[in-house]
Length: 315
Image 1 (tube, helix red, strand yellow):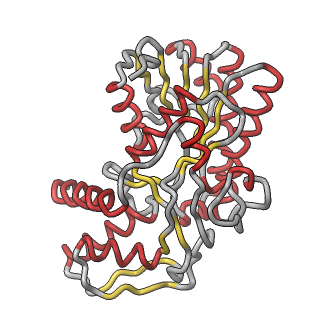
Image 2 (cartoon, one colour):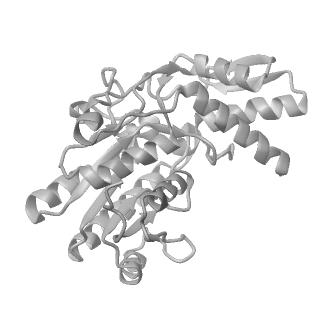
């Protein structure tokens, strides 16, 4: 440990959330004494007045901006306006206010949804502008992508130290298992475990199963973000991923096997698949700040399934 975080005041927006939990846990292990989490009850970070109040109250040296309005394909289709406006206003105003206050560093967390729909696999950062994002999550992806434009523009004009990271889909214990807003892995785990508990003979999955995705264990993603926070001070966007690809069909079969669900898997092809393929080139993160994901996919899935089983029996 280098001691970089020890005496810094670190604001983690979204610090009470899924990824935020692991970021804060790792900050504590790094000796950080001032981890500041703006709770939604106290600060609505879509509103400039609340952002100013947060900066006044917390006086950060570094802001790690994780807070986002997120969800799976269904939530993105239902709330494209909300997802665009709230994500854009949070990020843009946090960066501007940070600049005005001479913030030491701003770490903007983007999304793989910012990539064009038909990006060649594996996704390289230089492909980010070669087309329009997949339609179902384009408003969210583009709102986040504007923070890259702002980061680069502010570095160029004001010398403001803001970096932009692109994590792939996260999963792990403590994920969101709410069926109305969860992403694919927690949604599948819940379907399989609940089907076993209820004695259901089948589960239903969206799409055809042909689309592919990449996933990173949340603890690994947190490590990547903190390594970048400490060691990376450049203008170029950087992928944070595990560098592998799995089809949704194979994912469903893997989750079914690990949860011991033996019923039928039915596909609803009237529902969208989303982006056809997703897999990141992770070489830039390794080169610039020495990050490589450590957790194998099976190991991470088993831990996530065990966690969900424990909390579902407690409910």
